[in-house]
Length: 230
Ligand code: IPE
Ligand code: IPE
Ligand code: MG
Picture (cartoon, rainbow, N blue to C red):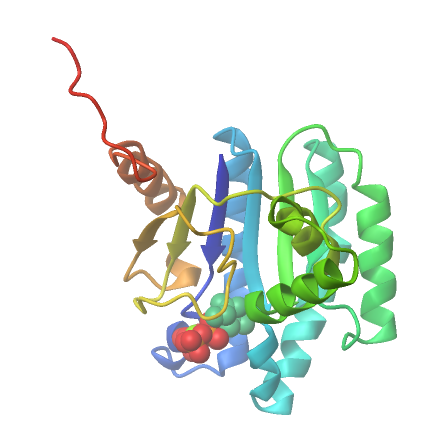
């Protein structure tokens, strides 16, 4: 199962407590750790987390800097935990706008956590689905690739070492009901789940109830399902 999560609501979590937005992001990092563990235990094959969108560069510089620092710190502290748990770690998205020091940390983390045989954890940073589609289409036009190759090309432009494939369940916390340029192609038949819960408040309880909700959905992929025989 491919689970994707738009981790939204950190800023509001902090603002409601009279704290700077960056405090919400720090708290959100704890929810990431919890969720990665819960997903690995639930036999999720691929977990793709939206950490920073291409449009998030337009936020105040102080917030962008704090997010980048937090992300680097997360990689430095969590890579070993990924290795210990057999989790394969990749960062997806553009690479041309990240700082050299962050790129170095990403390279080290990916190198040391590339052989995990368990869950594939993909963290999307400077990610834009539309940009990826345009880049992939450009590559496809240069080599007359078939439409079937688009998944592979998308993974290539996003630096994902293996295909994330179609998303089965997309969760967005924070109450908004939109995709904000995340995995537009891969979510063609994804089940969508929008939760009011702010990301730092997302715990194992919310995670398990999301999985139960997903299990109750009837996925039809455009077909007519025959009634089950009793
Ligand atoms: C999501 O939380 C984290 C990032 C986009 C980096 P937000 O920072 O968007 O939180 P809200 O939506 O303002 O509450
Ligand atoms: C989407 O959240 C990006 C991430 C969670 C990383 P945003 O908060 O940036 O999205 P909008 O602006 O509400 O659409
Ligand atoms: Mg937001």
